[in-house]
Image 1: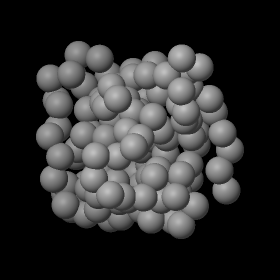
Image 2 (image 1 turned 180 degrees about the vertical axis):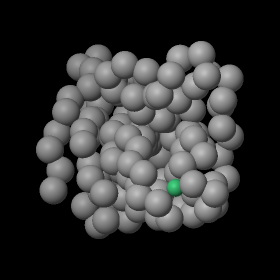
Image 3 (image 1 turned 90 degrees about the vertical axis):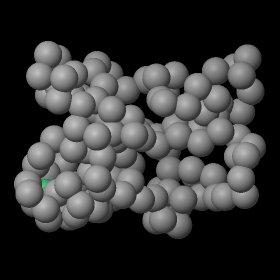
Image 4 (image 1 turned 30 degrees about the horizontal axis):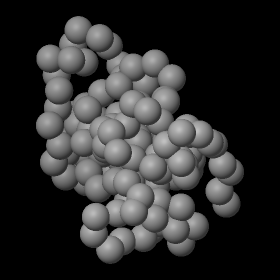
Length: 125
Ligand SMILES: [Zn+2]
């Protein structure tokens, strides 16, 4: 179950997207705004609550090289292993708090191979 951040949502309204921790975010997704400031990969992904089907746009990010051996975000997307876990906590349904989520579609994928060149969007299939 994720934190609800009712204090933020009550003041700012329905979020446009959520970061990897379920924190509500507003405005267009920009990879520099993901939770991990050292991210070298970032993606905006549409997921849904496994119980009620409510859709959410959520961010994933990875530093590169990763501090622990793990697949890159691109590899997780290509092998369909991307998983957000419980959906953002907007109380979409009583079971949604612990229902898990299903990954529906990668909306945007960005990578930064060199910090001097900045983020580059890439299409992944
Ligand atoms: Zn739900």
